[in-house]
Image 1 (cartoon, rainbow, N blue to C red):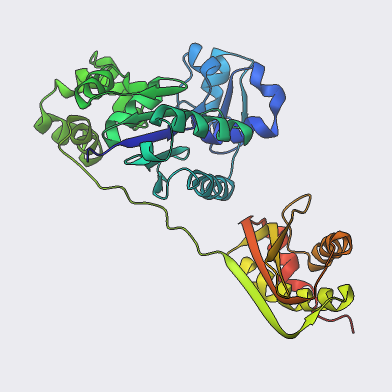
Image 2 (image 1 turned 90 degrees about the horizontal axis):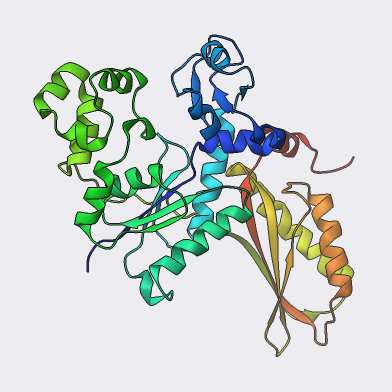
Length: 357
């Protein structure tokens, strides 16, 4: 079977996070800076900023000299890591093997081999991914190709869904990508631009030995990846096992208050396990096995992810009071679905007393 790679690129991912917080900035040149200081380097920019010649590596003050409408802000590493982990788990709904690029947040590589047996086509599969990310508030590009670097380079230069039919076409398209679209060191990029080297193809026309001698190992690694001499297998993000608690009864139970008491006994260790992962509960699956009947399932979603047991028990009570139990319950199973928690949520969960004396 021919290996098929897919690159999901959420361009300027930290910037998209910043624009979600400040949607009014979308009409302006916008950038993410390292610090909220005039001399702080610019890390990510949008297309409007690029039109004014503002590129990553430029100082914030220099960017303001190119356009007074430049909007800039800081996005913390913790926030970026949290969102990358959440998106990696979302993408696992489409393929079990997802590798996030932590050097360049917002880039994910997916194993697309064999998925045409589950979906009408890989094109349809890729469009479902784009639609899912749009619902999450992100603009994304998905390139289905054959290699890590080829699919990545094309994704940085295109928009939407791009299907590559054969490896030679992928190489041809990747060679045309401009170097300022790739995540390369600003000094290396600017030096190449002065030499008239603007595309991946122009870079590959240079002697490999000279690249290593003049620009160092990182530049040489990029050169070898672009040339196809450096290959690395997919390193998928490990899928975490769901957190579950269950309890079986000797006799069928139909009293709602007693069932709530038993659910609360299971909920405490469930939330403790979530907090140990630094997660908050986004959805609680409550399964009830009725006497001589099948399982019934209720899904409970708080308005916002939480570790507050009182709030969750109120939601469970409302749901159980509305559920008809034609036979007694003989087993309860709770499954927690979490997302990364804030520091305030974790601190409150650790500090809150287990008993009200």
